[in-house]
Amino acid sequence: MSGPNVHEDVASPRRTRDIIAKYGFSFKKSLGQNFLIDQNILEKIVSAAGLDETKGALEIGPGIGALTQQLAEQAGRVAAVEIDNRLIPILRDVLADRSNVHVVHGDVLKLNLGELIEKHFAGLSGVSVVANLPYYVTTPILMKLLEEKLPLERIVVMIQKEVAERMAAKPGGKEYGSLSVAVQYYCEPELVCIVPHTVFIPQPNVDSAVIKLTVRKQPPVDVRDEAHFFRTVQGSFAQRRKTIYNNLTALVGKENRELLGPLLESCGIAPARRGETLSLDEFARLSHALLEAGLPS
Image 1 (cartoon, helix red, strand yellow):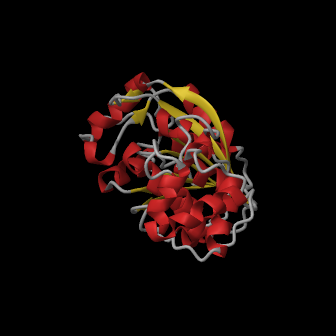
Image 2 (cartoon, one colour):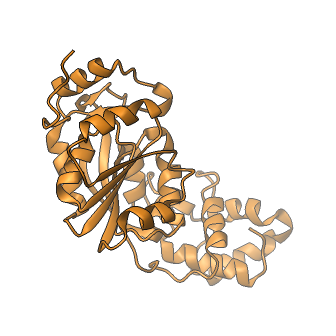
């Protein structure tokens, strides 16, 4: 069978189906594989990343290379990490004429990304992660990227719409939670666009969204112990219907509950409030006060 034209954009229904047929590829539901077939959405993703020939793009889960093609046109270098070994020969064929792309076979959650960035992007002025992430590993991947404090300028990812809304949520709404606090501690989030489920093969059950996370050089609040801060945040959201006082009682132990009321008041936080009403600044003050009081969390 003659192969599809390598110079043609991958992101069209016909081209995607041609590639799938040529290689006899079958989708693995366990890997959350959904290939984007809309060129306009790809252009929005790449544009949000602010790439040029002096910058590098780290792509996670390139699939059959639709986004990779577009990144290669804008970035100086692209490293695309793919976990599915069946896709490696497809990617190498599709990207054969892209000398600035390196395909890496591996699990991004297990790779040393600091080393990978150093190896592939040395000498460039900046690196961004740009990816269409599988829904089932979105949060673990993003938290790895942020917690490892990698030298990233931006993270531009297409993820489940509901998760993107939680990342960008402000205090007081039902979407605001520990994920919102964690992401906003490390980044400035901005929703780029909503992506309907109809522009994928196969179609997922829910809509997606593209979110741009601009990585902060410094957190927006002063935190003495990050691990303690995040335990405090998670504890505050443990049961969303409960007050901050009740959730923190479970965190610090009932034997310390009489200390909690005055401690919360000293932070300017009414004990009857719920976790989803607290700002990053209030969580930072609360974590600091708990540490000062020597309370476990």
